[in-house]
Image 1: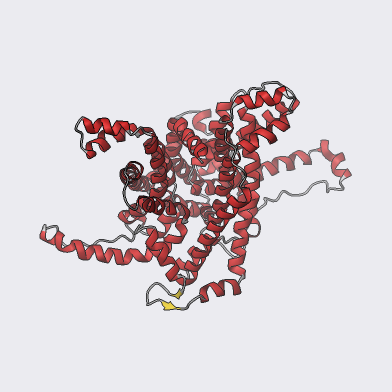
Image 2: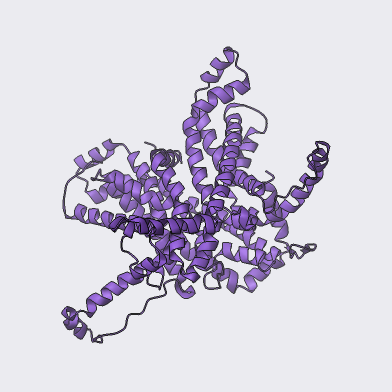
Length: 292
Length: 311
């Protein structure tokens, strides 16, 4: 309790003060919250980045995880291998994952993606493709330039594949567990009635695993609000207004700008957002619970 | 749902799965085998196999050793590793002991305020750790002062010299947070687990004259082993990879855990393009969790399964 409840209450207290961490906190009422909305840009931008990192990767993760779970559930050969391998990224330190993807995106000769681009560059420079180049009015030869994938201006997009890569396996295992829990007889009965595979999925599988799907969505939403490590590492611990998330902004405000009141106000809003998002997801996604 | 009919659509789906398998596994393999190459080799042929596989000789072995020696000794990964082992194992011990005791009491005994206590633990699941991070940081100063004032006279009278407790920049401080932060999930999971154990067992042990402590430590703990293992795996993975709390609470390089060490060295290695070191460091951080996962993979996924079904 000393470690969770007391600090949580203290957070509320700090968020109403102006404090540099050394002198006495000065009571300022709601001024921190007001300045968050007024100065707007930094906080609102960070919030937008969080929403982006919640929805864009989340959508891909859910779709892919459902697709993989559904396919693996059909007892395809190598199902176990897929299940074990896809889960692998989930157990790796987020710091290691971020550094690994910095290497993958690297504009130096090591960068995996730029090497793939280089490969296609060479391929299309080959004279076999001269007709195609001619057709598209492309120049005969142009120098290859490495693309800086992790530039601040589009870093958030670069984080998307990384998040998909690291998260999909977990949700796949989660959904697979739910699918395996659905009794076989339902499918047999439906198939006797002439249901197609699509119908089986949307009429039986999805409704009967709705609870687990809801859990998954809430995990993704809350996870998107809390993103810190990925941005922090990829931005070399100096995110800017184009890349800050709520958590990195909070850290920077408190531990680099010594603006504890403001930073804590962000933390309080983060908590409120997590709570709201959780309740809202429950509300929106609630269906009649199907017992089976 | 066995419908192993082969048709075009299932073929396409299979191909997609195999492609994704490559996307997931190749980067990991790449990290492992590249850690056996020196920076020059990495630059010349970023994706070629290392000489230790193609032409195993004394020199290629020396390259491998150089990378790991530079990471482990010169760049202190060995020290970070030991710090991580220490912090994570003590935290895990505390979490399992406190968590199982709290969960057992909450699951098996009727008393006033039980529900209140249970929901207090649950509220910890909803409160994001980022909220308590900053207040805890400042709270630690007054807590350290208080502990020093309380225990310094005792230490003096025991002849242990001057004692100053500092939770800032110390493993003790980090361990306390780790335990506190992990307890809500642990208590929640273990309470559900203890509730599934039949209460007749406790009654039988009581009739045999076992004390409550005996019942808990020798009967219940052994019955709860599967639950404890699951909780231990999840907490191990979470704490071994934890970054933000460490970043806030540890400044002294000699105390840093692996993710912190990797982050600072990784960010420098980017600038210096010291890829040999970076790849070796990545392997050192990834290996323990990969090992745990390989050995306990079934238990881990079953843990998720049980959680999923219970909601």
